[in-house]
Amino acid sequence: MVRNRLWMVGAVLALVASGCGAQQSPSSDGGGSAAGGGGGGDCGDLTINEQSWVGSTANVYVAKNLLENELGCTVSITKIAEIPVYEALADGKVDVILEDWQHVKLYKKYVDDLGKVKQAGSLGVTGHIGWYVPKYLVDENPELASWQGVAENSELFQTPESGDQGQFLAGDPGYVTNDESLIETLGLNFKVIYAGGEASEIAAIQQAYAQEEPLLFYWYEPQWLNAALDFEEVKLPKRTPGCDADPDNVDCAYPDYDLRKLYSSEFAESGSPAVEFVENFKWSNADQELVSKLIAEEKMTPEDAAAQWISDNKDKADAWLEGISS
Image 1 (cartoon, helix red, strand yellow):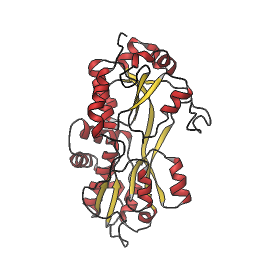
Image 2 (cartoon, one colour):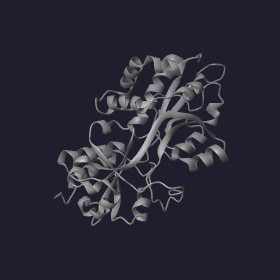
Image 3 (cartoon, one colour):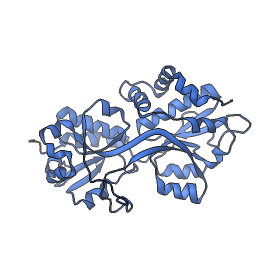
């Protein structure tokens, strides 16, 4: 492979990073208070947090549609980053998170120790995180399918941002990530460059593909882009007991994640029928990716994408609502 600079990716990052910061300010799409709904079957008001990836948007707007149209709730949406949203849950500013990638240290503080947050069960979606390169790159350089091969070819991935090191493109520093620790522990000559969020990382990936440039990047499932472009996952060291227990000394691949739902203790005990709906809300990777694709690739509004999915999957939506009285 005779490509020495991924300069186009650097240019894309510079253009988009200002609009896709990792720490998002709270916002609302429809007023309403964050306190859980009233008791006695009255749904009342609730606030759901939307994270900075389109899969979260898919979760939130499908739930919002059904909560408002079927249970008569008033749903507001905040956009608070992954770590600060726990404090918002504890303070009653947010009622529900529909997709958490198992921030277990925060579970201990807010669920176990403070009792301000409760788990609401599995979303039904299995998350997977890994290191990826374009398939066209591995077709020409098969050794890049493993971390050892990547380590030996760091010069392929150099960019103006990474200097004399290879660039490792990441999304948001607030995401679940072991990459800086992995790079240091494995002794790799790479520098982590944060795109600033999912949208800006997608733009960089798409630009690299358009130019058939080398790229090493943090990526995950479920994600609608996986069906649009051919990625090759880089084989990282096998997992062993305790291999990622010390966040500063991680030397193994990521685990798979059972994505979780969380709600504030106040909301969980409010008596609102929305509590049971949140507990019932459970769908598949394929369901989430379909709604995400409608939003991100087909450019439908989240509201319209959610309405289309519900119309096409009435049996699943009815199962979430079964036995709940508004």
